[in-house]
Length: 414
Image (cartoon, rainbow, N blue to C red):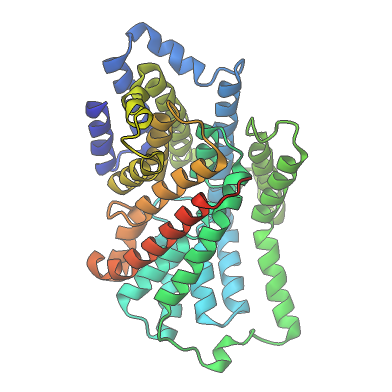
């Protein structure tokens, strides 16, 4: 286990594709801990359609493929630019623009994606005379407020699949945490800044505002349609959520809507499929499931069982410390969830609350990690040291994590 996870850390440090990293780590662990003849069986069983777990893995893998296709097509058709620019023209309050646009661009789940919103943030932040480190904080923090409640987040989908808990139950539990993230972002990012009255007004006359709003809604419709379809299928029941069919179906409906509103030709539709990035992320999801099955077969979870049974370590500590440390050290929420969930499922029956705490711990550890690409890219773009940005990030992290713990300990569940 030590050799395999050290290898994982080295691969991530070298920025090797996450899909390759997770799969090679799983194979290495299998070679060191299992009978070699069992490895092909485990690899097939991971996606065996005859089993419930295998069918779920296939659904999540295909859904991830569809989500990456959707995000790349959004960029290729220019609809994401229309989405951000229409909002920027519609609303003239820099604080609203600064807190909303990074989150909207966050709908595109690409590594180091904060660079896409950085130029907009830079321009709007000048109206508030923000220092470079505060610009960097605003860009980093608000980009990552959307993911804990975004149904199309691959990390969130994988968390629900690996823990066997309903996706939307996790999302509902994380709504208070996201609200606090936004409030903290406002208080920390815009402290002692003022906007002149005219800046806060809606731009233009009624007709112009109506046209801008229409453009925004049209550009946002593929994402909105995907979320609505996923929610409706989840509400209908019939086992859609348990097998991952709700998000899978909704994603391809969203793709169809995007193709229609952008009047995309076949050439434009298939262009994202020619890039390797879409397959790397999809492969990473298979790697997460494979790693879970290898860890389960190797009995690694048994290492921690005595600590729980004799009361030496509280389960809450393991639910927070393991994924948070992995997220911080690897700069990868997917890797942190894949390993953390795989270890903990050996001695813990997950509920929506424990799954939500696992996710938010890994996620917050990743957000504040110096190995996090968005963090390093943002600091570089705004010419600010990490230390200066941490003055804003650390207090925000503490308050947000305290909120997540409070929700976890409250006497209710979904």
